[in-house]
Length: 98
Length: 98
Length: 98
Length: 98
Image 1 (cartoon, chains in turn orange, blue, red, green):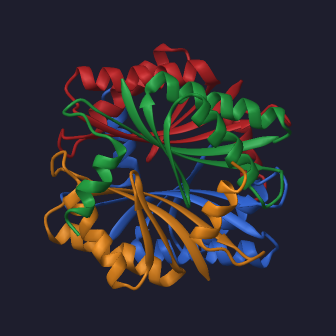
Image 2 (cartoon, rainbow over the protein chains, first blue to last red):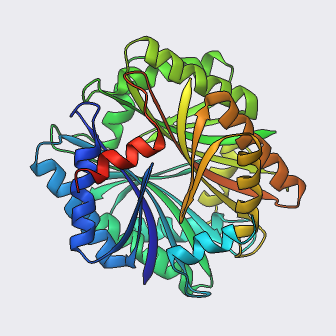
């Protein structure tokens, strides 16, 4: 099952500068071969369900290993069976109507 | 890795009454042996990471199988290594301060 | 316009114990006369759009005033024009199908 | 109070093609003079708290007026008092660490 997700990872107990930890997870997503796009409030990821959620688990595990005591992550998950759709398709179909 | 999540499942393309589909996923979460609490805007779930996300995948797969063409799910995921905490603990620690 | 929301407030830069700050916002929501229900991963709130969002703004302002340097909040917002629905209605309609 | 938000609007009861409605809200955000960036799973918006939430209310009102019976919106809200930060700053600080 293919999935498009939007992931926002919030490490807690490590101060106010979170970009270092976000970057660590970006590397994990890339290493997993997932298509990703970073934005100001999260990361869009496209891939197979298992690949995406395995990578997300690795991200939580890795952040805990490097000293993050608590993590709060927010995800939006989209799956559909009516037609194939990429992340670019989603953006294009809105932009065409602007 | 233990996880506490909050899941809000929104089936698309099946009209305005979504409770039938939410109930289907509740049954899947229960059948998986997960601790769950339904609230007005989602479901709190506590369990092992793999058990929780396997159940969530089954929920998406099942809804598609019974005719939901598109699903948009929002999840909040919490993991922590500093101490053990249950869903009841989280509520109690706020209520004590009210 | 009536709204049902689910609010999860995450104060950053104040350590790992967040319940004190969540409780402060609960008090603000109650003081605003809003119907609220606390759960393990947030708070359900029902009320007029302006009342709800004014209270949420006050919550952010108040937390900053008492020393929280950064706040990350996640909200689910539901509005509908097809029929009246309370938070209890939403829970009941799922429970009836379990 | 300045705010950076991420808004994902899901119109319900209008079929599976949602881009038309997302585009309507994009126009409302732009017309309000807000800085916005569309991505595959939502829109990043930067501005004054009141401007952002007034525009979001207008978006819900407008979608209902053009026939959307139910709307489910997910927002991530970020406010901070420790330093000024734009949406570009947030992306840059992650990219520098990749």
